[in-house]
Length: 303
Length: 310
Image (cartoon, rainbow over all chains, first blue to last red; front, side, top):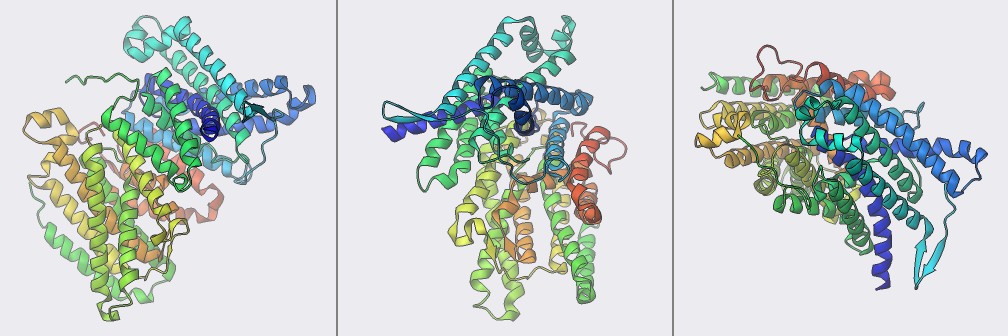
């Protein structure tokens, strides 16, 4: 029972990270109907932004304090939001009216470009770098369970961010416009919505969340390197599809499910090496029996 | 419409491959290896083109089928090559390649039947998922060396086998697509619903394309295994599938001649860029992006775009 609860806490923290990334995939898919493969690299860039910012911020604010960590996260998120918008502007906007497949391949190209550029010795280099300690972490006991303070921070911050996102999407004019563009791009444009601006904003928002997820992921990982985004990116993407791509609560749910699945499968000896396979097997099963995902709505194809 | 003289072309290609390979002992080993790589990549690209190009089903798992074929063929020759005399080696090799291809086709059938009900992006995701599952399974199979790979595979692959099998692949795919039966592939590509209304069973055509494509990917995997003498699960990851997809797109979806040219170009390009080793992959990724912006119909597609969808 203790083992179960312990894995549950770990899984929730990991799942929160996947949820943050999955939101970015799902928002872009909801509006543009293509898989933004470069999203996982934005996550990596977020971790690297924090890596370079942390020593600078540590001079101004007390190191390993909550305030300092929040400033680093906010600045990294802002940088990545800018990068996400830049990627959209340079690579995806010129292809807006092209077939989806063209955009999909371009996204793969962008992802490879970021990865290989960052692996170059004059950029970040391929070696793993130790990630600076942003927050002093300690374990405390909670009814016989050891809980890591960072896990709590991850879950709480994620919950706050998701609540904020829900507020933006449901209760602001920009959010209403986002939903309108996602529902029907042409009709939204006729209603006076500036589609380019909304799409840009969506990319910015998704990339900011990915940056924060990247920092959280780096805090748990042994270090950071240019390919670190691949695994969480792939898992988060699976999470987005499992939850029903284009659906925000679905992405959060899918992320949590994937995180729990990974920690539970990883904790069972003999099964742990098949972990990646299990995640994909779950994806395939869900797609076969519920092609629109857990919370997605099935769409009828019109002839 | 049939392809006139296709059989003659096939025969000419096989004879040419045999004649050239007869003198291959005089060739530089490095270039010889490269030429064999080109032949294997032609098989991979042309077989994926049947699925992605002609039938319009976007698959991202071709490396998985290649892995199945490669491991099956390699395991077979590793187990039996000591039992038979060296004179029987070519027969054994052909049997191993066939077994690898059939195994891959079988896996293709198992993957295709459930997943081909999905369309577009979802199919891409599911095939990607299956490709990864296949890789994870090999990574955990102790009998084929698990993560450390399968070593010491006899080097049976030579120029003759690589290029004559490439010719066979091109022959089978073109004659299949140009046959009366094969028109169904193009119909499914152009409009699935309309094809269904015309009495064509789209699922059957999609699965057929998938199984035939997987078979040749398996054969290519077998050739690859006996060419490199070493197989590792990481060599069949998502990136390998992307490489093959890029060949098909660069050549123009559904254009066999273009796809062959693209396979040649993309195999040789990294070697030409060897001098800029550090920038090689950056240039490769920029090439993909630039190509999608400037010529999404493929480098070698001129005039009217067939189907208009790809």
